[in-house]
Image 1 (spheres, rainbow, N blue to C red):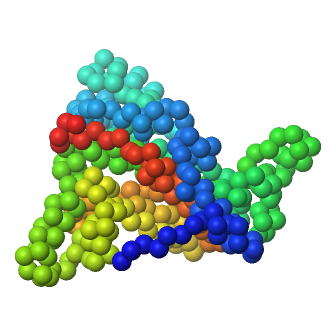
Image 2 (cartoon, rainbow, N blue to C red):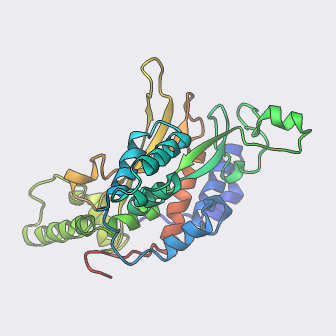
Image 3 (spheres, rainbow, N blue to C red):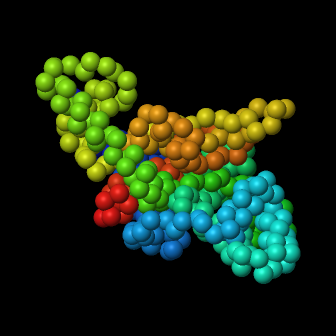
Length: 323
């Protein structure tokens, strides 16, 4: 089935209703997305790593001090940075002279190490404190939420400084998918797993050619929507296929959904791995307790990042092929 040709610019001129105009503005921003856009909010260091990823495997974690740092960081995940620093200083002092003690990492050091393995970095962006909208796309320059009229900024600081100091009232978190995909390929095992989709697609197409049908339907690879995109050339051998999933999460027994989150499922991985927690990649977290009213404005940041990667390409070093 041929995809319909849609002239978004022509539609933009015809749009009359404000919601339709807003949606088209979001679409146009995605169509013209670039990693250099202010909307991406990526640091120069993050941009450099995306465009020039390390061409070597992640360093092995075989040092006692390094392993201790990661274990302490994970054990204190619900504690403050100050708590980790106290543990860091105590360990350095009490075990001074012991093997590996000098390799115990600071809070910033262990976070940087974990990020190098997982590719996870966070981007904070403004949102309505009542979770109506995110101040992205056509909403980015608004001083108040267009739905509930709540200020973009903390009112007490705004009034106390006579409007001179603006501190955002609420933020949400987006986790760019690009660095996470690059990190997967820096490990030989996961890089091999990422070849599953191409291998399976080749087998299915061969079955179709020889038998005229697919004997067993057990994965997305056997679906006509996917195979049609392959045959039309929309999905190529080196492409990464993603699926996004969003839902609310109840963090406390006494409350309803306290936050909303979305994740990326990597279809290139085998079915027995791509849906497991270890391989599901975080996309973003939206604080509650209210349900987002304009969900597209929250998803925009992640989709903008993805669209920019589709336009510019994502350089990847493959540990399996050393290329």
